[in-house]
Image (cartoon, rainbow, N blue to C red; front, side, top):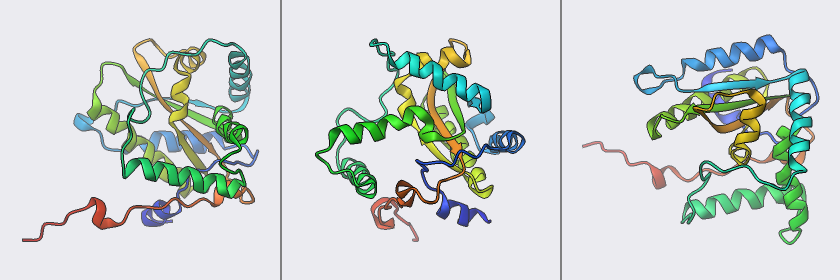
Length: 222
């Protein structure tokens, strides 16, 4: 598989087979992804990977945590508070397309919330990764995280593994940090669900639209 094919094939996978991921292969991908570029070669990503018994323990710990009413303290907004067009429409359309594949009508709020709650189970994936960043870093280093994560997900695609980057985990920063024993100077950015995609799951048939080239790119030739 070449890079172009991996880019075209990559999807946000939201349903996984129970088949375990080979730990050696996962370690190789996490290490190779660090070839991603970063400003000044700071390499600001700090990752914690959960598989096997650790993933089972985390799922139990999170289930116990969610029985308590008090929320974690949110440390950043996933989206701007007043999202405007065209970004608002693009976010709305992908959500509607996903729920249509799942057969969940707009008025069924309970079913939509239940589907969203699957984030907290890594969508059933057998492996998960949490990506942290030092709190002293700034916006340029946050962009470095994106380059690391994209590189990681393309390498997973090359190996036949699906993934889903999940900023939804920003709702549980203290819970996650406590479990993985992250030092206090690190802040949770996101999680990534990792595993073999379930080919029969309707939600995995979602192919998100992309804006036309002319809406975001300007070529200067003269």
